Length: 535
Image 1 (spheres, helix red, strand yellow):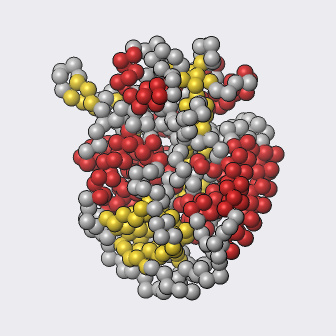
Image 2: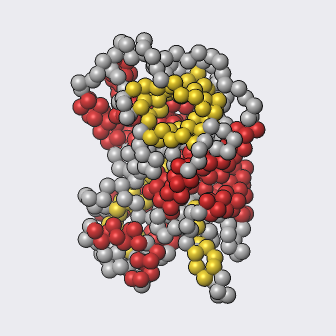
Image 3: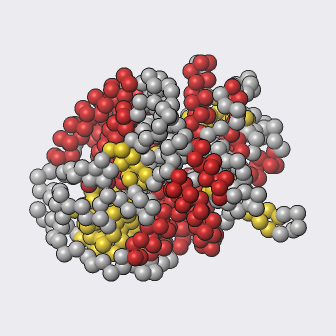
């Protein structure tokens, strides 16, 4: 079987975005921490978040208002206790980020005092979004990366894929760490840990069109499911209404904050259309806006719709949205003079691995934080700028719970080395690429913004065929980045479709033409975890 390199730590954190790095920094003074990053440390969804982070900083606002707005956006499916906990903890957690040096925008008030500039986004009744221009995620990520790189107790493993969580045996409910693939030397290694946290982000790469970076392949959700964790509400995939439509602008997001500052969605001739779909117009929640754009595109036979902020002063636009202005200008679009072509794209996974308010999963010593987790905060639709907030709030909660178990010892159970003796190198990488494209295309066509029972059934049949192909492939060849991600994406696709088939209504982000009405009683879609063979 050969020898396998084994690392030991107190806490293994899989993922290096806002959730993972916040958790690492909260624990590092007391624990030895390993942070696993699939690419380089900065490459994740956090970096690309533009809008900001929601919290009550304005005297005219209130926590109760933040709670009410979130519940409304969640279409009756949020867990109120989770919403209340998150909104109540928000300001404290943002002050923690501010203390680390995140450069949120400030302005001078009428008395000449500095205060944070607060913007407003869809679903919010007040200005409560702290932001760093239109690149908040980048500011947060850069600040946290600088901090973890300086801490002696945090060990950063870049270009490492987590393969599977390790348990003593198939019936065990205790996590011992993870098998990981070192991409730098293309070898499988073991990380043994007292505590393991999944902070791997979402699964939007399962769709053909997405605003997310390539690393968003549902790894944590798939690994947790294979290990026996339950998952919840996987059918609720948020499609961001406004991604830049241009052949050279892959994945570039146009922040909702533009609409918060007065941008209008319109047809090519400038005719606005959102008021006929919702009385809130351009500030309606994202699910309504995405469906409206999708409807208008199909009705008009158009490739895109348009977002126009050119009626605002040019210096205002350039100051508040410098990155979007520069990006569009580089493609020949002057947003101070002309509208921006936009289309919806898969953006955020509202469901995920079931956790409690301490981020604990069904498995002992295993936590899930951020987009990978289902906390009950988002319900059937995530409200803008609650996502980075959830990352930090529940990272703090997980850290407190892990701290309370400081005396837990390492398990003495032997971990079997990874066996590569019976497998060879693949000479058919093209098969993986073909399966990858097929999966993402039929998920877009059949399990996208608008669904039907027939489309879901077709998707499930194709998923089952792909699963068999991937299982045979995985059993015979050495692992690779593309194979691991494809394996996880197919697992996540199945979970999405199975949850969607359970829901006999249309609610929030899930719209089924066969069930256009919303039921009076709101229920979660729960898939109970089962122990499965991981290899």
